[in-house]
Image (cartoon, rainbow, N blue to C red; front, side, top):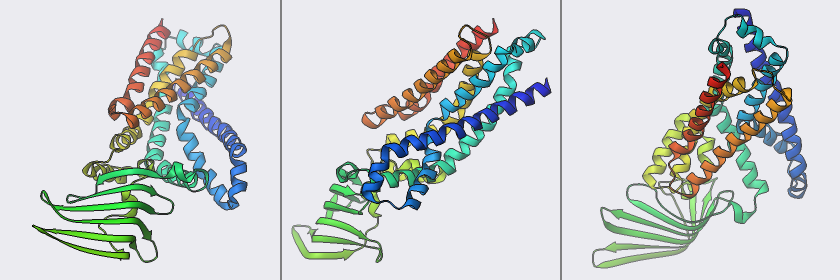
Length: 357
């Protein structure tokens, strides 16, 4: 049985690798065909486009991970079944659970790889992928964040009408500083902009009011260069920011966003939960794929592959639907990340019981 275990593990990992190498170039070609007119319109340098598609490779592989996994297992397991090898193995007295062992060992290798890639490699690629999309492909209106009010530290609150993350500037900026429940001063400006080379904020039509008991003091300038205890991106962190951070950075970012009362906190929590749930999905999807494709059936491999593609897209559909629910409502991120796995786990349990008969 050890030889069979090694054979199955090699075929599992090999087929998974081939699926990735096959579908990623197709995904790149489709994306290039869709965006080539924008590339020409924006006159984007070739090297920047090449770097973008290196990032796109990791983004695309992470997005379609369930489908690649499903197709890999169904493809070679169906071939084993069509050659009656599965029947021969099970007829020799080996249980179906023992037959599953090499599949689960191979799934462990892939899950470990997916875990470390999701924690440390994919975030960096997500940053490049989303920055490119924001800078070159999205309209100014689409990339701007509007009407932001948030707490940036224990004593200060800010409000802005709109923020452009590419130009690093915001309009109708207001900062209020409190000591306890008492408003100490308020800063207002028509525009605030980050000056990278000088590491300062530049405020236009600046005014500051000090509240001194029963009296007030007022100062104003047409332009004011100053520093604050926050970064320019803290005015309105991009919605994809959590996806670009490694595990330790993500935990720190979530703590900071929770203290500030960020309206995106549930979306950030969902990203953290999915860093754990996606690797675990490798085991559940493997069990489902083996249970579906281990026995010959009318229609052969084509039926199994069609089922695998449908179920893979259904998994991604659940993932996206729950993601939207979290971002648009108070739906708990923990349930959004783990409920699809629970439902597919029930399906795996049902299919494996049926396969044992």
